[in-house]
Image (cartoon, rainbow, N blue to C red; front, side, top):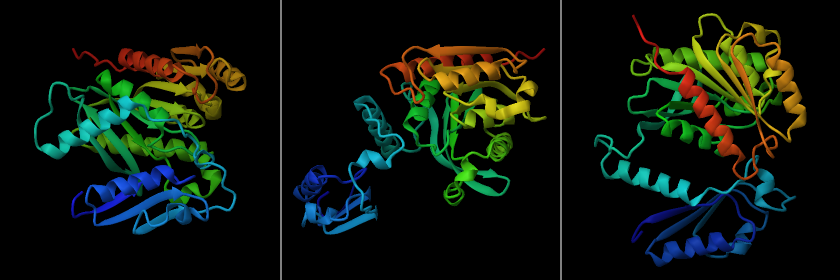
Length: 322
């Protein structure tokens, strides 16, 4: 940091103690200019920090501020293992971005991409494992994004099993401002179809067999898209999803479909059972004990991720050609 400008970013400021400490450490390491940036903070947040930083940047300073977590859909803690893994991966890429992947490196492509969905540019995150023969496209739940910690955990489990993943935002930032778009299943399904076609147009990805992973309302969109003629989807998994939102399209889904629901999510569990009765493809319902809708209970999301992994590994296996 010696002689450099340092940008300190936090998920938000409440008391300001951790942010102040981070700025002070940056100065102690020789930073000549410190910028503190956060997405949300109370109106008087700069007063708490004093002269800890030279510049302050904050996107929102709401009058009604009780805690940082109230402004996040998911405020779960990142584990030490996740942080260490990301730092090590970044360090390897920084050290030699052109070096071939190491034996202990699970991916050979791990990058942000722009996906063309019928002329609309959508942000995505692509991870392609070495030797992968299949890819799972994630359709996120209402109000979620490609950075959802829950879906990223599932994606990591799939990557470790040798499956490639594509997490992308179903809507642009501007489109999300109209909440009706978030629940427009036909629109979300069409976006998923467009992304699948984009995937097949990429020379290095076109050969991969495709699976869909849908969460919450977007599980309905995943099944709707899977029923579209010409969309060759080999498997679908719904996690805490609303497959019933696919309506009459359910009867046209041919891809083997796994429904994963929390045992304590009684309303959604009943809707999944009703939807399963309308599916004429291979189906299975997995009920995760003690889990509620968001699978926040210890160990429940890991159980769901492993069930999804096993389903995809089985149904996305390479097809033997005569």
